[in-house]
Amino acid sequence: MAYEYMLDALDQTKIYLAANLEAALAAIETARSLASSSIARWTGIDTSINLTDQYPYIELLPDVTNAEYGSDENPYSEEHWNYNNISILITSAGYDQGALQTELLYYAEAVERVIKGSFTFGGLFNRVRLLTTSYALLIEAQEDKLIKQTIEQSVEVRAFSS
Image (tube, rainbow, N blue to C red; front, side):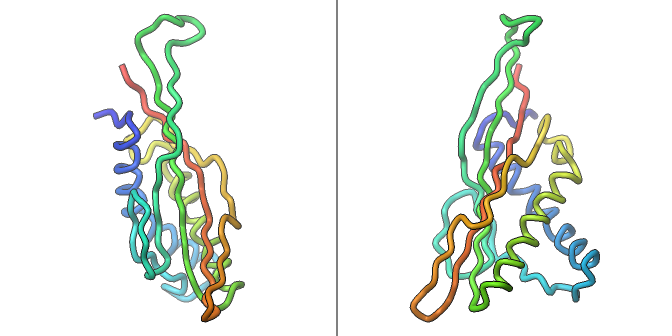
């Protein structure tokens, strides 16, 4: 089945990340000689905005879909590609901003490792690529000194449709 539409891209990306993110975090811990499970594990992953106080939390949100039809050789072809851009928001909270930032950097690295591990997400898509990572999307200090920070990674998922 071709997962060409945004809803499909969101759902399949969520499933693939949930299945592969743990291995990527464990690989980071091993590569950096960290104790096992020293990186806090995500408490949830969803395809909608979730107001939670359990962190870290991952949200996959639709950004934009660009369609491309035909090719230079055959501009009137019926085939087309959907380029679905997904924003991956990873939010965490803590009282030590340095530790919080490091945790989020590990998550950014883990998402990149998952993408590099399979640029098609196991054949689900024609191509998956990381476009950008914004490390300081939101830093918010609460009255009780709790700091919340979010990073955003923009991912392009390309699917062929005929």
